[in-house]
Length: 380
Image (tube, rainbow, N blue to C red; front, side, top):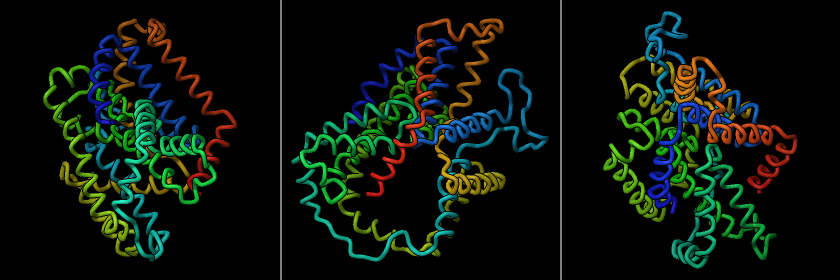
């Protein structure tokens, strides 16, 4: 359902985006940053800080308008900017290796893996209404930049619990407490690509990595992605659709084996993860400095993890940074330096109002209460 939403809604949204002026795109980019920060599990200020840091990191290198170098400090390597792939590997992979090394032992305690495949399949089809409802919920939340899988999981679980005839059974073995959030987050992953492909605004960290991947191949999001590169775009979407069936069979036949990975001691996992991280960092451009970037951002990601900073906000800021800078500069050139251009259209005004409202809501004191309730649910 999420892939079908991507195939139908993304081209329509991309066509609507043709009406956007540079000032509108600038407002849209700020809206994406604000939503990412607000959705950062109650840590709005931390999310904003990392989002802004990501934007600042994206400015390193050549200024596209003046041709001059910025923040390179005479280092030739920085003239091309900070590469995305080593940053993402360091933040998401190497940092987790450091966490595992500190915790030691195993991810889970030894035990017997049980479960019936046939019973699980029958249960899902028997509750097709729950599946449909939460798939639609996942699509809606996935389109909103920054909401992401974590918030979608929590909301799907909460809504399913409140609509159940036996809410007390949730957290005590009710299988719908698994069916609802898993259906929603699977739909959310595909729906996150709708604003990414149509507007260049990634809906979450996964979409941000996807967006960086298509940029590497010279594909630009927007209307041209579906018109000029139409065959490639729809080949990609069809591939996503077919991959759902592959995921299904891998899950059915491999779940019991994958679960045993959590029993592997950290002393074995950590060296393997670190080796793969450094190999992945150098594989793209074969530059040793990319390995240094992996290490730097791996340490930074570990520090963020220890202090509960949402590192996904930095990744999204890194992706949205060029969009903000490009359209901000173009807008000021068009208006001869007048900032009034950012309030010259209904689209811009609407986006700025929603952005300010989202930030105010995210900074409200009861936001912490919302986050704590979510943590309690996760614990259960």
